[in-house]
Every structure is written in structure tokens, then in C-alpha cells.
Image (tube, rainbow, N blue to C red; front, side):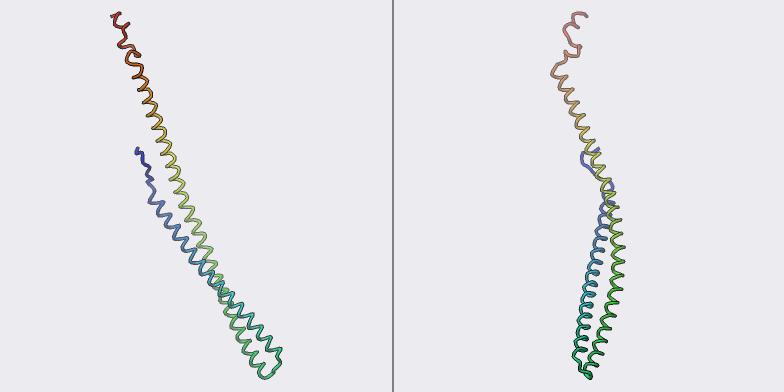
Length: 167
């Protein structure tokens, strides 16, 4: 086994990371749409409140002839703003629905990537443990060999002087 760690499933991990990134971008794009629609809705609501205040002001002014046509125009404008607000609210509901789906897809993509990442981390830890074990075994063998050399060949009894006299 090589001392260098290689993860055979690295292409799978890379692919899952790309999928997760793509889902993140999708969520970000929908978030931008949500912010835009909410901003539009707030502006429409502000315009609606302003139109109602103008209508109330004209009704208080009391000029019957010009007041009635002005009130009619303001009522039409108010109705127009109300319809725009309803359309924006429906659009916002659609955006929120798509955002919910996109977030769920992102969570799934992140979980898929993390599963492979955890497998990689586990395999790396096993690889590192194997290297440490091999290194410890190599050091033990070196120590045994060094010990054998330091005591010389007489430690094993084959070339001892006592063995030569008995022959």
C-alpha cells in the first residue's frame, strides 16, 4: 500500500460538491426573486396608503364638483394598486413555494456530499493508522536488529569458545 492517501471515490465527492454548489446558487437566485417581489409589494402597499390618504383629503375639502371626479380618480387608482398588490402577493406565494423546494433540494445535496466526505475522512483515518502501525513495526524490527548486532554473534551460542572445546 502506498504511503500517499488516495480516495477512490474522489470523483463522486467532487460531483456531489458541484451539485451542492448548484443548489446553493439556485436558492440564492430564488432569494433574490423573493426580495424583489417583497420590495415591490411593500412599494405597492405604500402607494395604496398614499392614494387612500389623498382620497380622504379630497373628501374633506368639500368641493363637490371637482371633489367627486377627483375622488373617482383616486378610487380607480386605489383599485389599481389593490389589484397590483394581489398579483404581487400571488407571485410571492409562488416564489416562496419554489424557495421551499430549492432549500429541501439543497439540504439533500449537502447530506449526500457529507456522507461521501465522512467516508473519505474514515478511510483517511484508517490509512493514517495503518501507516503508524507499519512505522511502529519497522521501528521494532530495527530495534531487534540493533540489539542483535550490539551483543555480537556470541549472544546466540554458535561461535562461543565453550562450544569449540566440546567438539
